[in-house]
Image 1 (cartoon, rainbow, N blue to C red):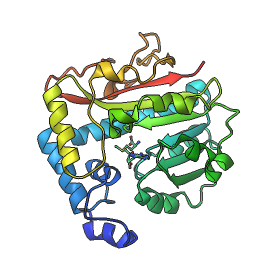
Image 2: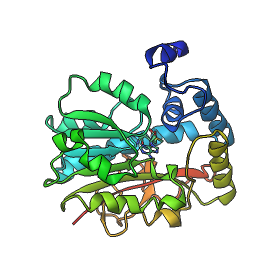
Image 3: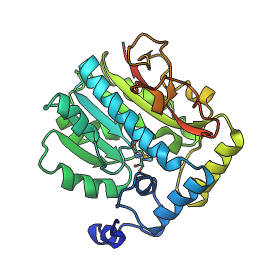
Length: 284
Ligand code: SAM
């Protein structure tokens, strides 16, 4: 049983605990303890509205783990720029990468200051990782940050991670353009790890989106898979099957290179109306 008051004690009093944040509500969905009442209320409301939302969060983390491992071991990428990284959880990007390549480096970026507060403590004795607080839409600010510049060498391939992030942005932000804006600064051989909440059911998507907006959280929307197909446009898509011989395509994150699971764009279970559309792209 998680000691909920513990979360209140461990974080600076200036943090606004009265309205939810995406990072803390997602932490709740994952079973973490770095969240407060309004975050848990939003997480529970989403689970009620769209049963399986908690499972989705876990599936998304499973995808992140397999994708980072794949990028390190199959494509030799050793530097990670994890945008909208979220609160530290089990199996963070640097831990997965450094297991395969101990000198792998990771810069975590998140707009929520709670990520910095918690991340610094966890990363204190790991010189190859850092956390910065920034809005990822400010591409130059993120890339020119002193910590980013210190840890990442942009003459070598970098893996840019936008995992469960782009649905946080409204259409007016042109979210998929962000992928290209970051990659424009990366050399060939760089990779993108991507996932995005999506649905074919426009009513389910609207209900989910409206519930998040009602909570006061700045957010984008659940998009249709056809819209999300633009995410990795222009990149070489990694085949989503473990053998690596299948059709390169973006799929339900749970089915991406997952042992014993056939890659599928749409979930097999019709009750799973919302899922994370996901894939890995390479810059040639
Ligand atoms: N990437 C992690 C994962 O997939 O497990 C966390 C995903 S969580 C759903 C989305 C994260 O993006 C949150 O931690 C949130 O604070 C962060 N975020 C949202 N908008 C952002 C922005 N404009 N700049 C930086 N981070 C942002």
